[in-house]
Length: 392
Ligand code: TGC
Ligand code: FAD
Image (cartoon, rainbow, N blue to C red; front, side, top):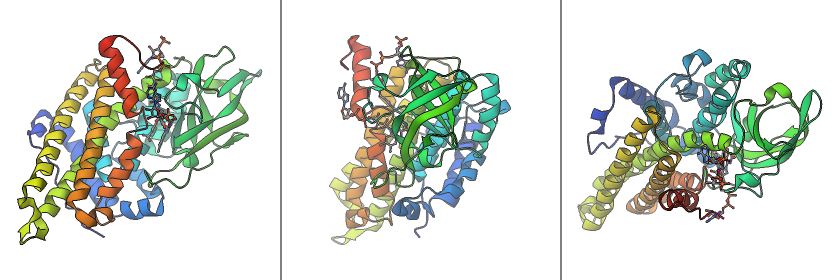
C-alpha cells in the first residue's frame, strides 16, 4: 500500500482568503482522508465496492449536510466550508464526494428546502448521521439531459399516491434507505416524493460493469404501483425548477470537489517527475515535462480562484445557476485534462493502482457527464450571454 505523501498546492496563497474555521474544517477533512480513505480506496475501486465503513467518518467530518442547520443534525457551516469538504473528499475519490453530494445537496437539501417540518424532523437527523443513506431520482432511461420529458408519474389513489416508472443511473440506489423521486402528477406537473425502502413495488437493481466511479454504487429505482403515503410529497415547491434548484447546490460542490482530484494528480506528477531518472536526470529537468507541470498548476490556480469567488457569491445568496454551470464545466474539464497529463508524466506506472491517477481520470469521465454534461453547461452559458436557447 502506497504512503499518502499528498501536499496541497496553493500557488497564489489562497489560504489567506480562508478564515481559521475554514482551515480547521478543511484540515480535519484532509487528515481523515489521509488516515481512513487513501489507504483503502484503491482496493475498493478495483473490487468495485463502496467502502461502507467510511459512512460514519463522512458524517463525523460534517460531509452529510454541511450547510443544513444544526437543529436538523446538519453542520450549520457556510458554503465555502461545504466546498472545502468536497475538495478534500474528491482528493480521496470522486465516489466519496458523490456519496456526500447526493446525501447533502440532492436529498437533505430538497427535504430541508421543499419539505415540511414533520419531514425535516423525520429524515434530516438520520441522513446527517449516516443512519439513513439517500438517493435522488431524476434521470430516466429515455430522459437524461432533458428531464422535463420524464414519464415517471403518480396518481391520487385516495389516502395515498400510486407511483409508476423507472429512474436510471442513480448514485447509491442499491444501498439507499430513502429516495427523493421526481415524478409527474395527473396534470403533468413535476413533484418530489420521498420513497422509502421496503415500500411494496419499489426495487433498486444495481448497474454493474462501470469503468468509472467504481467505489460508488449506482443503479436504478423502479416503481411498480408503489403506494406512497400522501405525507411523503414535498409540499413547498413543484415544477422542473425544484430538482434543478438541488442541482445548483450539487454542481457547486462538484466545482470544488474536482479541484481536489486535480491537486492529487498534480502533486503525484510533480513528485514522480522529481524522483524518476531518465537520461541520467530527473524527468522534471526536461522542458516538455515542465510545460505540463506549469500548465497544471496554472489551471488549478485559476479554478481555485473561480471557485473561491463563487463561494463568496453563494454565501451572499448571489451565485446564479449560470455562474455555477461555468464553474462546474470549467473545473471538471480542467481536472480531466490534468489527470491525462499526469498519467503521461507517470509513464507506464500511471496506469497502475500504485498511483491515484488512472482512478481519478476514470472517475472524472462520469463527473463530466453527470449533473449536466459538459455541453449542456456550455449551452447554459451560451443562453445566458445571448438570450437565445439552443437546447431545442
Ligand atoms: P427550462 O425551461 O430552462 O427550465 C424549466 C424551469 O426551471 C427553472 N429553472 C430553474 N429553477 C431553479 N434552479 C435552476 N437551476 C433552474 N434552471 C431552470 C426555469 O426558470 C423554468 O421555470 P418555469 O417556472 O419557467 O417553468 O428547462 P429545459 O427543459 O429547457 O431544460 C434546461 C436544461 C437542459 C438546462 C436542464 O434541464 C438541465 O440542466 N439538464 C441537465 C440534467 C441534469 O443535470 N441532470 C442531473 C441529474 S442528477 C445527477 O446527475 C446526480 S449525479 C450525483 C453524484 O454526484 O453522484
Ligand atoms: P444524454 O442526455 O442522452 O446525452 C448524450 C449526449 O448528447 C451528451 O454528450 C449530451 O451533451 C448530448 N446532448 C443532449 N442534449 C443535447 C442538446 N440539446 N444539445 C447538444 N448536445 C446535447 N442521475 C440522477 O438523477 N441521479 C443520480 O444520482 C445520478 N447519478 C449518476 C451517476 C453516474 C455514475 C452517472 C454516469 C450518471 C448519473 N446520473 C444521475 C445521470 C446523469 O445526470 C446523466 O447521465 C446526465 O444528465 C446525461 O444524461 P444521459 O446519460 O441520458 O445523456
